[in-house]
Amino acid sequence: MNQEEVKALAANVNALLKNYHDQQRCTAELFKICLEFLDEKRAGGVFKSERAAFIKRKERKEQLIVAIKGYIEMIEKREDRVTSHTNNKEKQDE
Image 1 (cartoon, rainbow, N blue to C red):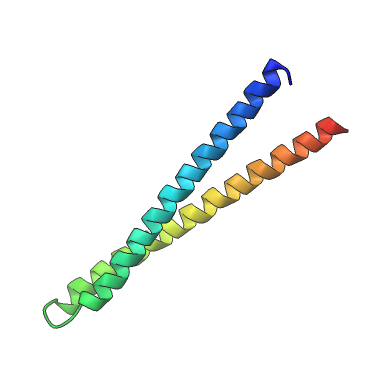
Image 2: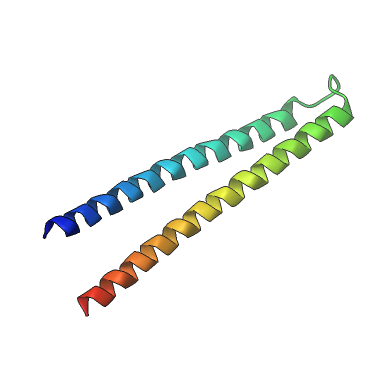
């Protein structure tokens, strides 16, 4: 391996590590929102006004949707990068 290949490989490893950390962060964020949403449903009751509870549930639902969409987008970008990298490598090998 020459120095340029080593640099490219190191850059790929660093990108994969960043994606992994981003995935873990997004997953934790997603689970946190899910737990808050579920806890709120259990905590809701006589002591909270129905209107305030509805608004809060709606906000949590919107946060959950945004988090899930962000997670899916991140995974799709990662898959596209891996696919394009694999395709480029196959072309170089030919």
